[in-house]
Image 1: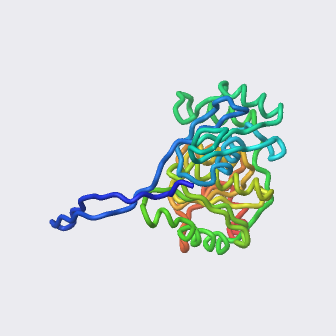
Image 2: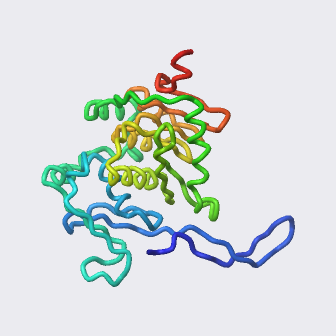
Image 3: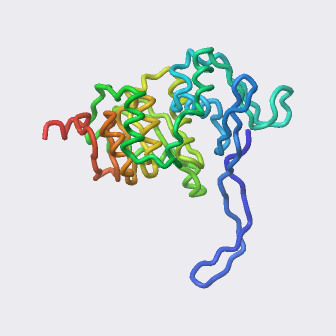
Length: 273
């Protein structure tokens, strides 16, 4: 497997002093996802958890609806594979999922489209059910989970170049994590791990090291994850989507403070207030 970091030489300037030294940077490489041998999507990602990334991506994009619709996954990370070139992952899907993939070009690319927030959310409401999970946890539970997120980011601590996502049960007995150069990839990798372990996503909390964008909230809605907590701020579109689709959104989450923006009923302390 390709190393996730690479050592480089650089000049460091600090307090008027110059130093020629070394540092480590995060590795970014393309991953081409093919469906039955046909090119489908190229993701720029941190090497590692390629199958999980592909599964999470296909799931949160609405191509597959469960692991039963995936017939096989084959990945090669080197140039020695006799079937696939390096950094290509080939997926065989059940006919119904392959048909959805064929219609994917009709979907709106929300990150670059000209739609306003209300139009985008209305389109999603027409095609997806709201998050209906009965999961609940205390503020103490959530704070304890947030406090564990830095431990799940060794590459960030080494390089400062990755985002981190974790999926956890309220009691912390389940704690899956992933890092990547893109927070969308990190979320897909974490969801892919949960799918492979056949975990109930409606019983998990998503933890995010950065801000909550519209796309990150949408991935949780599509996956049926009921709570998304991040150490940074949500965007206005993420808030509108979360409110309309039943997602509990928590921002600026720290061990001793946080903001609850939508659907506070899942946090038992607030539900009593």
